[in-house]
Image (cartoon, rainbow, N blue to C red):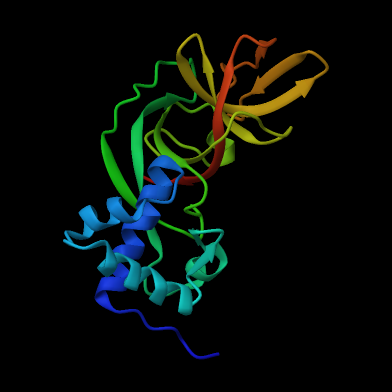
Length: 205
């Protein structure tokens, strides 16, 4: 299969599209892209978008453009998105996770597809060390409000975030630690908490 090549301008507008999808979950408008690219005419943006459609990166459907995720993820030329670091989550006693963006990290779209929202947290504690989540690791989280049994989640309990394995049994939720330290015990809840997302990967600090 012939490798698709992109111009610098095509790469730039594709980067803006991916980052906007990551941050807001929405495809940016032509006007927004015009501002991002510092163009004076929307036609310049439209030409670039049409070029990306011809190369299979975008799909034009029902009057709007949609990112073709399968194609862009395999592209060797542009394979990262900016993911925000939002603060610290505990792997021991839950502590408050400040919703302030400390920094942005470039993460491969192979593990953070741009059509899903992701964020990073800094782990604290040792209650999930048997799952490979160590103190000060960066934890990549896919933002969602539900989870399957056995998945490692970020749960918000009384405005405090913690990382644990999720298990639901009837009307009871149990958040299990996986630790070499026996001090850590399961957290037993009903519905008085929120799932903030599912852990995708732990990244050494």
